[in-house]
Length: 279
Image (tube, rainbow, N blue to C red; front, top):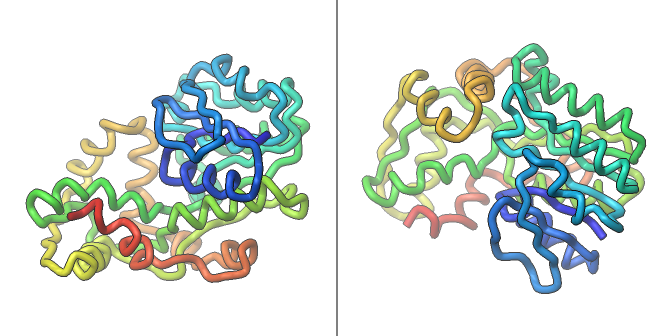
C-alpha cells in the first residue's frame, strides 16, 4: 500500500490516479475530504499533527510526502513525519522538495527544507527527492479575476522561469515510488521553456478565445496576497526567485524526460487541460 499526502491537490490528485491505475492499493491523505478514485481509501489528517498520520502508515510500503504551507513555518516539525514513517516500517519515501534548496540554499524556507531532505537521507527507508521549480498551476490564483474581469494580476510581468506542469511532477513521483532504480535520486523538475507571467496571460487568452488584460503588481502587493496562504518567509523566498531568477533557475532541466522518456508538458498544454477554470 502507498500513502499519498496532499492527495487532493494539484500534484497529489494525478499521482493518486496514476498509482490506482497501476493497480496499487492507495491511501489518500488530505486535510479535507476530496474526490479520490474508486477503491482508494481516504484519511482526513493535518500533517501539522504527525500522529494523525499513523493509522494511514500501518502496513504501508511507501509514502509520498508533500509539505503543506503550515509545515514551512518556523515552529513546524516536518521531520517528525519522516521519523513516524520509518518507525512504521515504510520502506520508501519520496519527498516533494523545492528547486530553491539548490539554487537559493540560504533562504530561510530553503534551509528548513534542506533539513528535511537531510533527515530523509538519514532515516533508513529508501528515498528519492523531487525539486520542482514554479508550478504551472499557480496560474489558478488568477482564475477568479479572469472570470470576473478578464484580468491577470502578477508581479514581474516580463521575468520568466520554466514553470512545470504538476502532472509531470506526479508522473515522476509515481515512477520513483514504483521503480527501484530511482532510489537515491534527486530530480530537478522544470517545464520545457522559460515563460513570463505576461506570456502566461496571453496563453490563457488564446485558450479562452477572448482578451485577457495583464496588470503588474508591486512586490509588496504580491507579498501581501501570498502571505494569506503561506508563511512570510516562504513568500519572500519565492518572490526573490521570480523577481530575479539566477542562471540555475532559468535552466531547462532534462530530468522529467530522463525519468519519463518524454518531454515535459508546456504551460500551453496545462492551460488547454484547465481552461474551464478560467471561463
